[in-house]
Length: 420
Image 1: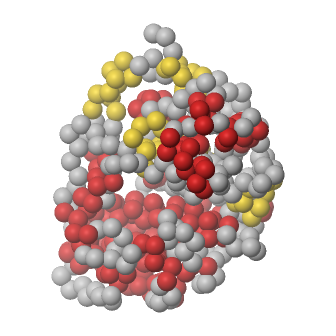
Image 2: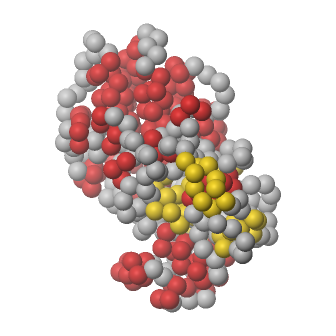
Image 3: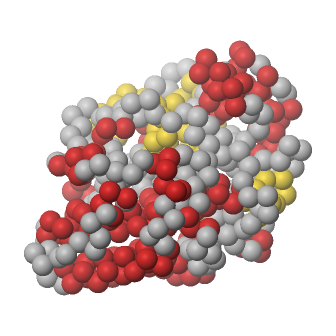
């Protein structure tokens, strides 16, 4: 699967029609090593079955493009509008998210037939040359790339709770152990700085706009991500047992759920479950699958803090989008011996609550539900992960999770305040 995924995600100039075919094909390629039974499992409410992802992304194109812009289009199955809507209440009611794993029908084969039907009609629509389609199709493809990442993180959780501990890829696909560069804090940009994306510079999500001024105070930011060995030191020092290190909600969560280590780590702190099976813990690889609460507690223990999303963006703004992304085929974080480590490996928790930028305006209609209505009680993450496509991520990209989330590839770097 790794080779196929890399060949299908090459970033190069291409027509919208070609990009549509490439991105849609990758979603199916990511299921090559799965059995139909694997695609129906939901292991917790945050996880969706693989076949649901495949159907929902097709529903997105059918509901918001084909049904509204193709005069002769006939909906594939009217029941799918209820089954595969996610959270677009202005578009209708939906099957409850925690119950997606109860959908034995439609089958995996039927979902693939649905995708083929949607693709056939989408390609015909793209051939009309309608210029107004460009933004909607590009939005749909970026939406699909988000679900490709979810397909991998969700099946990882599904396989992790299986006593057989199956793997998506063979062990040989995983990264070899590496050596992380020495930790250093580099001066960050400060003063009045521009943040956010300009829509005229290319596609971006509405939550990245508008571009605006932000004040950055003098600070330093770490040259790399926090590693497994450093986080293990925090555990060995009793970090999970020291209430003074934790936010109130974090301390309550840790005790309620019995957390004593990152998700997928063994009790012995020497191995972890990965998409290539159980592997020895790579001491110098970035720590992953930790919540915001854990990242914040570690930072306090280390005499530091998490960077704000604007400090992070200022540091990454002029860097090329390079790193351990989906194209590497590793599907797991790797140690960075040199060069910037701002893109790939793990989504980085920031100290910033997910909130609207000054002057934010969501998209009109149902698509306005995409980002804006989630701007409460969540934290912003930046940078993408080892299962993010390179042509999907950028320095202004904002994603968001509840602070107790751990099933995504979530890690962090440190920052410090400095005297002016």
